Length: 313
Image (cartoon, rainbow, N blue to C red):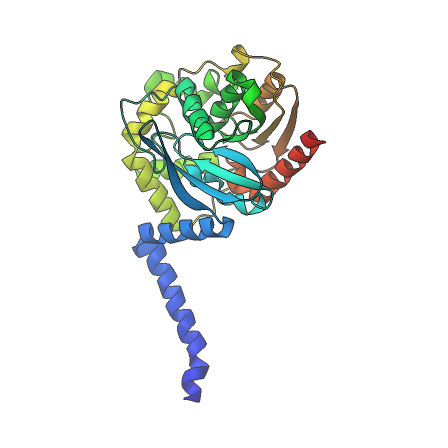
């Protein structure tokens, strides 16, 4: 009996290691689901949905305080902000919404995925929540949605938080990725196999991604599954006119964030965006790539809290 008790912790450890190996390598989709659940639970995020004009709009919600709407980027989803959520929920109520064709949202190949349509989609979501004047945050393409939302409805937007926003000429007309897409139809976010997805991860992270195999596998499978719908989305979003060619001197307070290792949206675009939003604070995060809220969640949250304190003073 004593020997059995003494050996119990080792046995439990062996079983735990075996379970981790199985979930990570043998049943990666199940492992990825469990990890996603753990990340959501850490931030108190709960999934729910609204129905707007007959369309189901899935989103995550957590926290207390003033609402903050979070808008993800192209090929991403509402869980993009999971790692950062625990650092913000004591101050704000977070609403992370899935854009059309992403995450758990409906996939309609004939839908309108233009930037103007995406702005209206988020605006209707905000209105359905009963928010009259909103604080918005957006990553990459979501940063474009948030930027044009503020430009189109300045009286409805209290502030914007733009994380490597793909919305200025540096990306939309001048980047090598867009030039190659225009010439060949290929884009590093349009994934048809696991090798292409591995190259995408190398592109978006400032440093090699320390990510369990199960997550890499699940993300790749989702990207392969969504190749057609994401191709349709990019065709329409590609037509967006850079915001710096349409607007200037927008008065909405803005926190503009860029990773200095961003290989998707050139970091120089943040300076162009700062001219569009002159009442802005610019933060360059050293060593971060295209998704700093994933790579440096605590730092991003800290910078945002300081920004909100500043504009409230």
